Image (cartoon, rainbow, N blue to C red):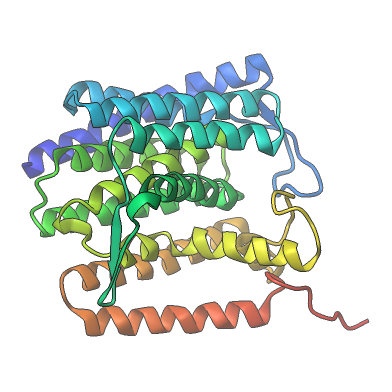
Length: 343
């Protein structure tokens, strides 16, 4: 794929989404799809949701202009429709977590069962694992898990959109450097990069619109699919690369699960102790908090690029630095367990 075509994909979807989002905002206000402030929310006034609809339509436009019809692509389209509809319903009138999970699993199941995109094996640090008969269930679990990781990290203006953009950009850079020939993966990556950046134009602090569950779940869904496609070619030969790129949302989700288990609370119970909340408690502004998380995620992205290019030493050094930063974060915040407060 030529660089000119890549630039055209990104620019086309970026411009379309950037122009389309204000119309989505009017629709959200008209039907009452608003995010109302409460004690758990950071924003102070009602903000329209449904921004994910703009990202989704940008994705559809990109596919129509640059994609090719295939069973794999059909499965992605069907699954994405299910996940976006589930998100739209929740954005208009919040539904129970179990019903969202049903939609997530249904959308995820279509990818391996109909599309044949399956996580059959992984390799990392010289270790090889073949999943055998468990391949399809593990694939469904992986997609569903990534959907929820992105969904949970979506708590500040521009956070989920920015992290997703970094993911798409990094995968795109790796694909170009490794001369990837998987057209489906390339089209998905650059179409989503343009669409997400177009949305981010309206979502960065102060946000004029939120992506809602329709956006965060769709982004998680596509990110998971691109990761799975990567296992079939030289771009992502190791499981460690997508894991590193998703390190922040994965760690945030892991901490949330541990935190709620320690408090004997349901795993799905929302709280105000996520990574971004912890940085806000340290007196950082919303914008600075998001930029700090961007910076750390860019370091993860850089380590992934070094790793894929075979420069293991630099990749390992960056990874160790990030691991130390993570430990410092845990020690200095209440992300897992509330520390004793001095009276």
